[in-house]
Image (cartoon, rainbow, N blue to C red; front, side):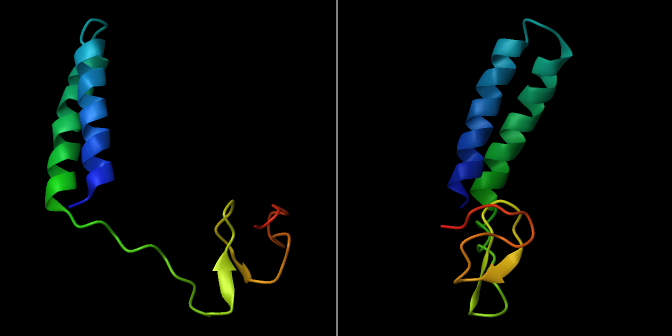
Length: 81
């Protein structure tokens, strides 16, 4: 089960009910919401990505593999925690 996807599906479904007043956007959301709920129930949550090298981590901004010791990402310049 993938709870976050199912919860987002519920939110999209309620938004679709609201947007039915305004036209075709509501119909599209009403179709997407239940599909997301079904996907959240049937699919397994994917594992988070792990760097190939254990001495590295991912930049939280650009997702580049960087050394664990650096204070700033060399790719994008974002300060690392």
